[in-house]
Length: 402
Ligand code: F6P
Image 1: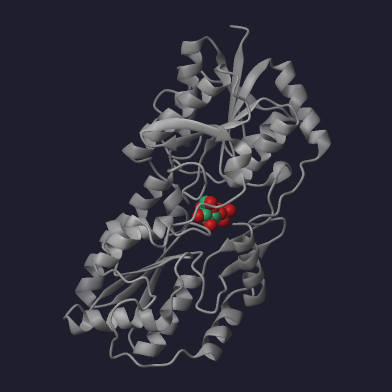
Image 2: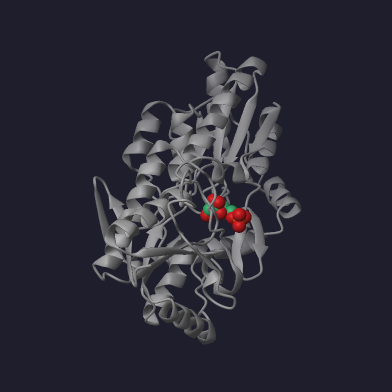
């Protein structure tokens, strides 16, 4: 065994491509003369009890295309550094000292922390405490600033696109309106990309204010054109016309978003007297094999993260600025969400094709029903424990952080 060692861990929610990063990091370590050890269950494996396995060609073979993570992951636990969109929690000093001790005892040159915003906020606190870390940006939401793409996003979009392809045929056969609710937290990347790739007719995202009139107008417009079915793609974090978001509060953790698809469906149903079906894709978007794009991206992230440690560029996060792999200080990557540009090329192209963002930017339609604010508010109160007031303040807070 060589004296030099590098550690790797996967933290937070899983997504396709984690194993490809682990494999990329391990293989690069060996080529550069390091042993590579993988800590189990995210940051938890770093201390009390220390849990790790030495990564070898034997235990990393065949994992490139496997979903999940061979190292396991923990979403919150003792090392939570975020409670809300912008709330930062200080990690206990005892834990930081414990991790530092583990790193020293194992003789680690550095630790590759693979995670999203919350997990990288932990890495940033480690860095400030003198623990040698580098970051790798992971999340299906694609909402980390400083990188054009996080790995896992493309696979999630592929999953949502496949769902739309399937819904397309059944919707067309039965002349139905379908709502597909997708993940993405406070950014609309998954909804936007899947909506375009899967031929969605209406896309509702947090970045573009929309109205029920706008949504219904598109459905009626299609009907007038003889298209008796419509596919709506709704991002879980899309804001209601009143400005709230739908979900449930969780103690010491980010709110669990979800439920807007159902609200949209019932209001559209009420207005158009037309049956609307809902599919919530949920964690299917986080499972399964990574796409080829994610395999390539994740492999590059793994290899270049080890390069950062080798070059002693600690406290940095590897990021993708096509076609180059660059790096930024982790602190620059964790303080703000990267949102969809409401006037960006993808949105413009979608609009050019006639996709509606529910904002009524299309021509006026015969639809004249008025928004019934009371009914919508009643729906929200009845169906979401995350009240509108809380949602509004969370949203305001998120916006204030931008
Ligand atoms: O951040 C990834 C993500 O899948 C979001 O899209 C979603 O809102 C959230 O995690 C779900 O988290 P959990 O599995 O903890 O409910």
